[in-house]
Length: 158
Length: 158
DNA sequence: GCCGAGGTACTCGGATACGATTTGTCCGAGTTAGAATGG
DNA sequence: CCATTCTAACTCGGACAAATCGTATCCGAGTACCTCGGC
Image (cartoon, rainbow over all chains, first blue to last red; front, top):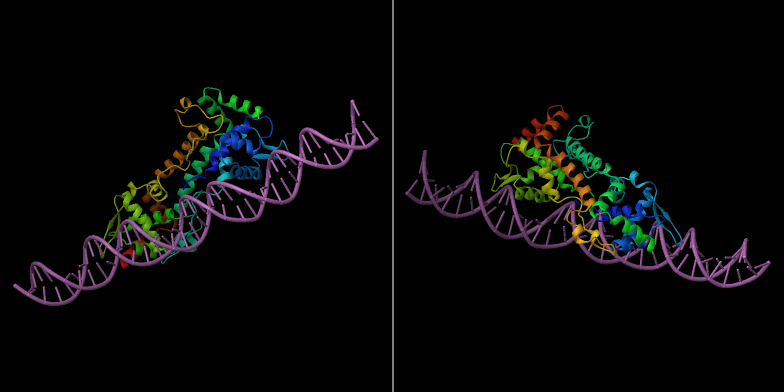
């Protein structure tokens, strides 16, 4: 099991958008990160459908965050790109085979599914506690406080 | 992103093996759960390579847990079937593009990778805290205290 | 009756096809900015 | 000089292939049990 590669791209793009003043096109975002423009566009469309970003058409169009970077969690982005479903899909094999559980005992989810769901929840909570704004702050700190300013400058220059 | 279907099978099989006295063949395990025998064998082989179960060849051969069910965590099994790697694979796109980060600022992992790693750890800790023995107890409780005894009886009868 | 050799049936193990999901790409519909034109 | 119209370029959006990974299957290598023969 592995996360889609687009998750990384989408998170970086959201951080970039949080530093932009106006719309930024998929073309620019792809150029800035040196990634396939068409495929990135596909993921941005998904973010648009989910209401994380808003798309502006036209000559000076592009994408804009629909709300503050502090109000967008990493989980929001991951859930859009990777799908909202849980990792584990219970196929209810306890109901199959010669020792199939009787339906009356299947009112609750099987204990294996419960265990996996618990872990799933822990993962989601960890991601929900981190916002795009947090990521931006950390990226800036790692770079010595120049990264975000460089991005803002680059966006204006282009 | 989704977990391999074999994870569910492997966990059920480990619970079953925890109730067995001697070796149980892949054929029997597949029959008991009504799943493809050959494909299940593939996963059991992986568990054998990882040292979770021990394989016994010969006419009365099969698989046996290498240690107590209480000493085998759900994470052990999941890591074998699904691979030990983390969900998120950082491709270091911060080093690409016109605003590539200078190598001196890349001594630490990128903040996005750190955020994802934190969530990954939370997930793994949750799974590490649950043992195969715990699953067995819960399954038995769900069934009203008959499931494990039925499994033991079925294993002896065949 | 006991021991040993041989055969047999069962097991695991890796190498081999198939299908689905993810990845990657393309072109068309729609919209906005700017230029050209007329008043 | 200003309003209007038109063109044109740029944008997003969904529809269309290729590659990779998960799924499923098969047959060969090896081993323990059972049978059979000899002592």
